[in-house]
Image 1 (cartoon, helix red, strand yellow):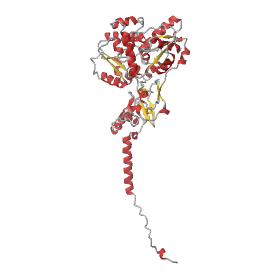
Image 2 (cartoon, helix red, strand yellow; image 1 turned 30 degrees about the vertical axis):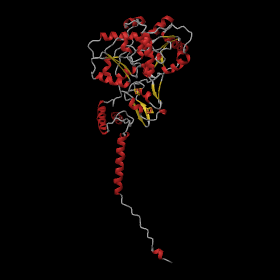
Image 3 (tube, helix red, strand yellow; image 1 turned 120 degrees about the vertical axis):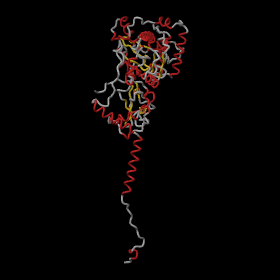
Image 4 (cartoon, helix red, strand yellow; image 1 turned 90 degrees about the horizontal axis):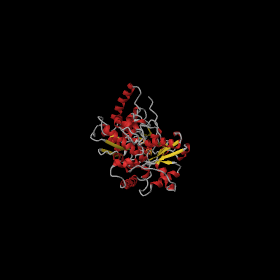
Length: 457
Ligand code: SF4
Ligand code: SF4
């Protein structure tokens, strides 16, 4: 079976690649190879986490996002600012200045994602309360890169993923339907746009892993919008925008999901390597005592996405300050606070929009089972002969990866520098041995006093 085609917002510009192999070891799914001095991405393994783009010293990766020209396709455009956008600005910058800036960029309406986060938090709380009998901990589903990591590397954990929509998707479904009714427009003429801090969210709009049909029409890079906002902030236009409570705002950073769903027996894990480690532990059933694990592929949560403009520590400080300021004006009880901002009370349950998360079929050694077994045996032999250092210098992330590439005919044993050195050594020894067997050539002696010298003819 041919491998499925996957859309990827993370793309490589080969002309910029210097073949340094830095990205090979950064990829959590071993999706990068460097062959003939250039990196290549194996599409069926890539989860669009962006780790390679963050780590390439030559900036050889790009992330495909939409441009504002796309707004012209719709009669009415709604933008969904998320807490990750607000985190880019100091806490004393009024949100209305940001909203007015968005309006001046061409958006007719602004709908704050934190309102949807609170609805999703309620769904998570209810799901957890009614969850009986299955394995724990449950795993959050809001980071698309984590969902893809589970598909590719930990399909056995799919049952533990909480089946709710990501807040931006929930917001899009709600506001598109509501605006269509209010404006007497067909939903097809309403454009709903997200401002994305990371490539995985952009990819999930083009090719969703968990939604039947997305209500989002596209997304813009957070750093690009941030740059435009700096020039267009403020204005006199009165905008009718509601925000969620401090709990909805908290979703921008790690731990916000736990706090808004009232989960005390849970972990918030961020950074793709940390997430990988935790999923491995959960897969081995090493933490059944936990109720819930909130996972973010990016360091610091969404505000640490590679498309963010501000330093992630500064952004986190900005957001936490906003949360503290807001919470000081709210009732002490979380439920009471969230009930005040719950505008999505009539929102249909996530289940109506989600599709089942399924394992992602990876490239097999061979379609034919007998041939695959032969290749597997050959791979084991090749692997035994490799040094087992997983150094990455060969352009594969591990010796196992190189062994697989060799049996697939995509690499050679001497791509391993240790095997190459051994081959060169063997060759030079052979040449020395050969040299010993060649008869020694003796130069004829040249006599100084020849008979000719005496010849006086
Ligand atoms: S990090 Fe990867 S993509 Fe960037 S230059 Fe090195 S090998 Fe090429
Ligand atoms: S985006 Fe992530 S999964 Fe894809 S190649 Fe880069 S590091 Fe690997």
